[in-house]
Structure formats: C-alpha cells, structure tokens
Length: 177
Image 1: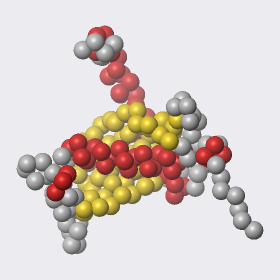
Image 2: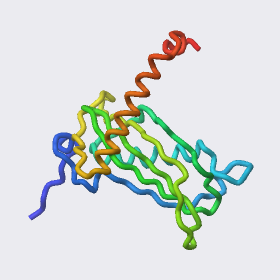
Image 3: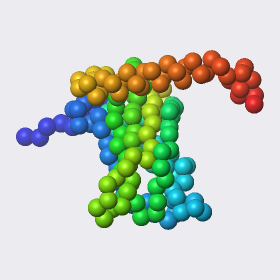
C-alpha cells in the first residue's frame, strides 16, 4: 500500500515537521567567486544567502517563495578561496504569508580548521501561489529558548526596518530618485 504524497496546497495548512525549518548548504569557495584581493565578493555571498534562504522557505511553505527583504547583514570576516563555507538558514518567525529566516555563514580551512562565523542576517520571504499572489504559510511556533530569542530578534529588526522606511524622503519612497 502506498501513501499519497501531500500536495503543496495541503502543506500550507499543516505544520511541517520541525526538521523542515532548517537548511544547511556546505561547499568550497571557488576562485570564480572572489574579487581581486582573493576574498569572496560580498555579492557572491549574498547570492548564496538568498539561495539557502529560498531552499529553507520553500521547504517550510511547500511553495515557490520570493525574497522581500534582507536586514541587518554584517560581514565580520572575509571568506578565502578554498575555505569550506557553511550557510545555515532557519525559520525563526512567520506571518500570514511571510517567513523570517535567520541565516548564519561560517567558513574556514576544510582540513580540520574551526569554522568561524563570517556573516549573519535576517531574510524575509513570501510564499506565492501559481498566479504570483501571496499565499498562506504554516505558522512557526518557537519552542526552545533560543528559538524564542531569535523570533523576538526577527520581530525587533522588522519593527526597526519599518521605522526606517518612515525616514525615507518622499521622492525616494516614490521611486523618483
């Protein structure tokens, strides 16, 4: 007897298994991703962050997702050619159609050196339906103290970014500059 595979539409109302709330990518930093100084381009790193975040958001929601914002990104130390790079994306909070993910990046010598944090940020994705309209996502309920702290952090950053939008000059907000 076979068990039917759930459709993406049925996943949106069911809460996914907890392991679907995290995604980890690991790979070696290649020469094609570096700048003239031999360090990974910030843009390449941001692409990796977006790809890891998308995989996590799509697994959680069971839908195609789009990036809405990247907040509080900080580049702490460079990533070098040949470093083992590890990106970890975790759902830390959800709205009706949005998912707030914390993404941390660690890198170091793959021959046994300790991986050190190089970057972290919060990324917001929205699940969309076949017509490209926002679609409901399963609620993420933080259970552990760490999850609760990360959920609060995500909401605090969201509030701060919302306040910053209010500071934008009118012509910037209207897309005239």
